[in-house]
Amino acid sequence: MRGRSSMLVDRRVLLGAASFAAITTILQPTRLFAQGSSPTRIGIIGSGNIGGTIGGLWVKKGHSVFFSSRHPDELKDMVAKLGSLAQAGTVEQAVAFGDVLFIAVPYGAIPQIGKDYSAAMKGKVMLDACNAVSSRDGAIADEVERNGIGVTTQKYFPGVRIVRAFNTMSYMVFAREANRPDPKLAIPIAGDDPQALQIAASLVRDAGFDPVTVGTLADARRFQRGQAGYGQQVTAAELKQKLSLP
Ligand SMILES: NC(=O)c1ccc[n+]([C@@H]2O[C@H](COP(=O)([O-])OP(=O)(O)OC[C@H]3O[C@@H](n4cnc5c(N)ncnc54)[C@H](OP(=O)(O)O)[C@@H]3O)[C@@H](O)[C@H]2O)c1
Image (cartoon, rainbow, N blue to C red):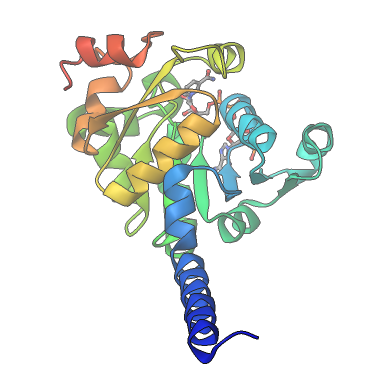
C-alpha cells in the first residue's frame, strides 16, 4: 500500500504537469510561431506569380492558406490542385482569415489596398513582396525612390506589422530553388517589429529558403529594385558578405 507522502508527491507531480501544460498552452502561439513549425493561417493578397508560388510552398509545408483575388472564381483550379489546406475568396476574406498576411500586387495598388483594408489588418504581420516599377505603377515609384520601399509600404498600412520579403528574385527562381539541399537560397528580409521579423523568418524557412535579416524598414532600401541586395541568387553567407552584415 502506498503511503500518504508518496500520494502527495504524485499529486504535486500531477499539479506540476497540469500547470506546465497550462503555461505551454498560453505560450504556444509565440513559441510555435518562433519555431515556424506550427500550422499558421496565412491570407494572401495578390495570388498571381509570386502570391501563387510562395503561397503554394506554404501549403506544401502544412500551413492553411487563403488565396484572394478581385475575381476569386479564377483561383478555383489553383486551390483545387493545392488540396484541402488551400482556399480562395475575396481580399476581405483573406484579410480576416490570416493570422499572417502576404501581399504581392503591383505596387500601384498599395494605396488603395491600404485605404480599404489597413484597419482590418491592424496588428497583423504582413510580408510584403511588392516592387515599384515606374512604367507599371506610376508616380508612387518616385515616392519609393525618395523614401525607400519599406517606409513607403508602412505609410499606407498604419498599424500593420510590415516585413519586406520575397521581392528580390523571380517567382521562377523561387519555384525552382525552394527546399534545395543546403546551403539554401538566401532571402533578405527587413522590418521594424522584432517579433514580426521572427515570424517572417520562420515562414521564409518553411517556404524552403534561408532568411537574412538586413535591418529595419528603412534598411529595406538596400534590397529594393536597383540596389545592391536585389536579384542576388546567393547563399546567406554570401549575401551577408555583399551587404556587410554581421
Ligand atoms: N513576378 C515576379 O517574379 C516578382 C518577383 C518579386 C516581386 N514581384 C512583385 O510582386 C508583385 C506581384 O507580382 P506578380 O508577378 O505576382 O504579379 P501578378 O502575377 O500580376 O499578380 C498580381 C495579383 O495582384 C492582384 N491585384 C492587382 N491589383 C489588385 C488590387 N487593387 N486589389 C487586390 N488584388 C489586386 C491581381 O489579382 P486580381 O486581378 O485577380 O484581383 C493579380 O493576381 C509586384 O509588385 C511585383 O513587382 C514580382
